[in-house]
Length: 276
Image 1 (cartoon, rainbow, N blue to C red):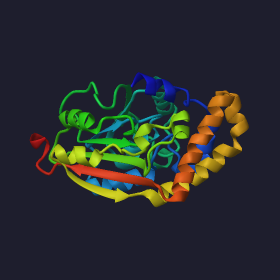
Image 2: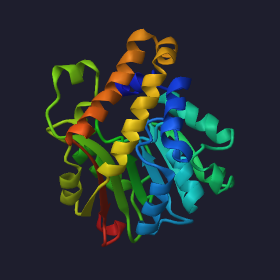
Image 3: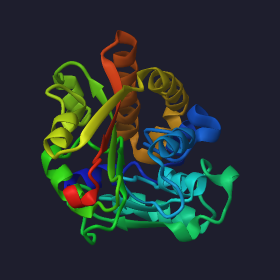
């Protein structure tokens, strides 16, 4: 996990990346690597009955935009957890400065319901039975699903505990070029089996395909990054700046080839947390 944190630290606080994401997502911008939008979170919360009093762990929160948006849009209490100290630092700074673009239009009274901490999303150092739900959006690529689910179960409470994992998947094995670009191996076959791990833990699992919306976003993001390649080279260094654009280009090309899938896995425990 330390190696992952070091890699992602290098991408934080790069103005050209933030600008590209903001251009690609518009008023749905909630920070780098968000993997979803505030509108999506609002609909998800409505489906699962999350509201004021619901406590959600955002596992792998990155720079925290979606964590803040969840609290602002729904009234939930949201705790963001990420292994990257740089990402958590950005999240805390943005919260102190008034939140992210993605939640600004939905009230500024959510600050007291949002907090961020540095930690391992698969083994959180958090009290048992302290959350109603665990949310992992775009962060499940490096984790062993069975280990993560076992640890997350201990955190859950209430009558309708839930785990939501949103993850992209490329339906082929990685090539040497993919590995050279340091694309996360969990994107590729053999794919992490979140559905199987959650079902084995006793959850009822429902799966939805979110690919269409994701494809449009990746197209816009790649175009926005490519236009900023000189700035990325200057801000990140030539090698890292070019590699970052190349990574997003792989995702764009896989969408175009029909090999990329964006999957939502919603797991609920109907018997309540006592049955977990």
